[in-house]
Length: 191
Image (cartoon, rainbow, N blue to C red; front, side, top):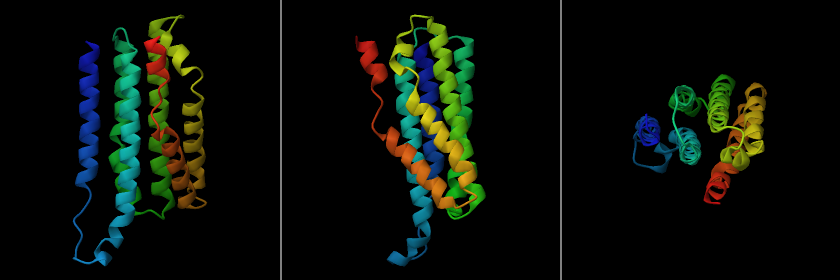
């Protein structure tokens, strides 16, 4: 399989996930501003998940740009990531419908944690395929930002049972940390 085909498939999956999420946004029942009030948590959760999917899509693009060849291990690691990303619309819908509830907030964190772990595995699989002189390994280093993000997700899960808004604040914090694109891979490959 070529790198382009893997990228195109992954891009298509992410596009479908965003489409599924936007289709869950409902038309307001009424014509005044008060008709929008029940849609605010649903929209905000959609916006957060849209940002997360955009971040994954962008970083996935840069990650695969560093791939010289695609093998079976990389295909499996990529499918593993796409599986967890495919659960984002479900977690988004549940949290959007129940923004004050602990279990939906914790489940959202669980999906994000497992997607982060899957991305980390994909990254490590690609580094291993490149060998000891991997440019990607130099670019990502210890991936402190990725590890801190997963720690925040892991912390947000039990904190959701203290108060859902604490975990949601942690999710927003992680999204904000990643909102500015990570240019480490681009800079390293350009050298």
